[in-house]
Image 1 (tube, rainbow, N blue to C red):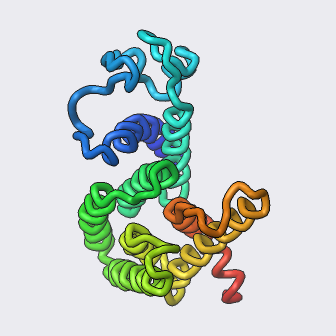
Image 2: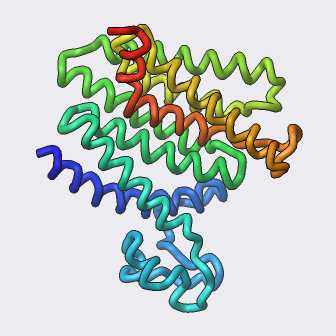
Image 3: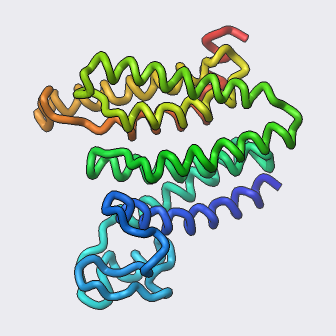
Length: 261
C-alpha cells in the first residue's frame, strides 16, 4: 500500500513541480499563475503540451526552446525532480494518513520559496499567506479525523514560538541579517514541526537549530573561499527550509537519542 502511495505521490510531485516552476517565475513578477499558458521567456511562443512533460520534455529538447533554441534553465527539471522526491519521501514518512496532504503542501511551498529566495533574496507573501491559509484547515481536518487535538495545539504553539524566535533575531540584527520574510516563514515551519512533537517542542527547536547551523556553515565556507564577504547578503529561507525538512524526516531518532528515550 505504501509503495503504491509513493508511486502516486511521485507522479503527483512531478506535476506539482511543473506548476511550481510557473509559480517561481511569475509570483516575484506579480503575474497570474493561472493564465496565460506557459511561454518561452525569450521568443514568447506558447509551450505546447508535448514540450511541457515534467523532466522528459527538458531532456528530449536538450534544455532548449523548440522554437528559438534559447536555453531552458536546468532549474526546471531540478524543481520537478525535487518535488517528486519530497512527495515520495512524504508518502513513506506519513503513509496513508490525514497528515500527508498538509505536508505535501508544505514541501511544495518550501521548494518554491527556496528557489525564489536563492535567486531574488525575497520570500513572497503571495506564497507564505496562501500556504498558511491552506495548511491550517488541513491540519485541523487531520486533528478532527483522528480525534487528536493535542497535535494541533502543539502546532499552533510551535508556530507562535518559531515566529517569536525569528522576530527577536530580526530585531536584534536591525533587519540586516534576517528579513521579515524569514519571520513569516518561521510560523509555517513551527506549525508543521510542532505538529510532530512527542517531546516538548523538540522538533521546532531542532529544525530552527539545523537551519541556523546550515546557514552558518555555508556562509563561513563561502567567505573562506572568498566568494562572499561579511557585507554580502545570503538568503536564509532555504536553510530554514532545509533544517525543517531534515527535522521532519530524521528528527524523531535524533531527539530520541538526545533525550535517551
